[in-house]
Amino acid sequence: MIRIDRDSPTRDDVHLLLSEHLADMFATSPAESVHALDHSALSAPPITFWTAREEGDLLGCGALKLLDSPTGPARHGEIKSMRTAATARGRGVATLMLRHILDHARARNLEHVYLETGTEDYFAPARRLYARHGFTECPPFADYVLDPNSVFMKLGL
Image 1 (cartoon, one colour):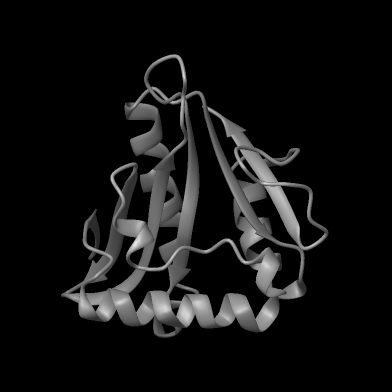
Image 2: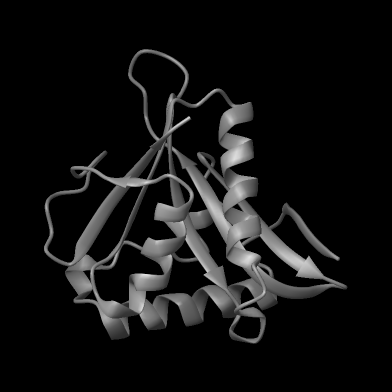
């Protein structure tokens, strides 16, 4: 049975998965268009980080970053570092993680969840996953700027 729990991005097996994630991002996108976070950035207080595991084996990870709100509690979040281990692809891990993150966002009473992903073919499965769950394209959000290598998406909760 696959379990999703809060975890540390600095844990050895997670660190390795995140390093693979970053390497793939830099291999498929220009450096100035890579917005993936490393394990230390994913440890920051406004970020909640989860892993999916089965019998202790790491299957994937994902995070929710709360976006700043100058007038009170955060009302918006951003999905970060969604990644499925190569050995677990095709098993629905990304769907389980996405649902978990969205459930957490709803429990926090967030109004919207945003994300940034790439325009390259490599990112097509991710874009399809998010579209299947109701995400639609939107203008850049937070500190992002228009970038021909980025697709910005949001979901109202």
